[in-house]
Image (cartoon, rainbow, N blue to C red; front, side):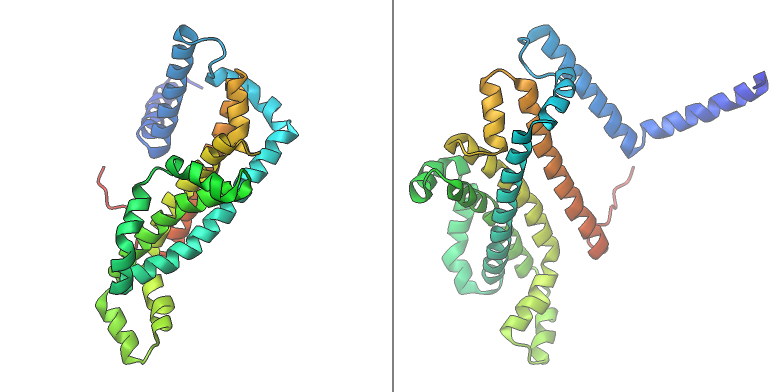
Length: 272
């Protein structure tokens, strides 16, 4: 390449680099690299050798992924979270819709739903183990408790926000109460329901891990606890990263579903 071509190529390369740095992807990549470098430097300078650091975590990934016990733990925890989240989704949707549309139900339940939502889930674990024993049922109950209230409160807000004209149209066509619930109220509340589901998923994972810590049940929580107590922090952090990745993938899936099926709801109106 001749010298004039190099002179012309340099501004184009600089422009592409500048565009990448100021793009959303570039900002995420640069911030992530900076955090990892800072983490690595701080641990190497000030922490004991067994504390997890990015280079050690990368080295530990093949060892952890080749361990069948790890994948058994992943299956147990993810399965319990999915089961508990499904129960919380159905119950929270129905009770939240009833709270949002029926004043008597709201008067009965609103105070207690708000109170239990604010209660730390770790506070009820001793009671849950008494009621359900030191078994997987205690973990499932903790997951449902953690996820239910986020969904119920959000659906209740969505049901209250249903435009009155929608209800009037349903009544004018002699729609039944069940018809108004499933054909009007719940579709209108869908953005609130999806927001509650995203919150509930994170709380459900936390509930599962806390229950496995406390009850010493097989799962990712116990895998993390065991490797932490045996000073294998890199292996423990691989499990933490897998949990985080699963939550991020679920959040992305819900966000994509919202964009796909509710394009009028997810509009980015921010200015640069």
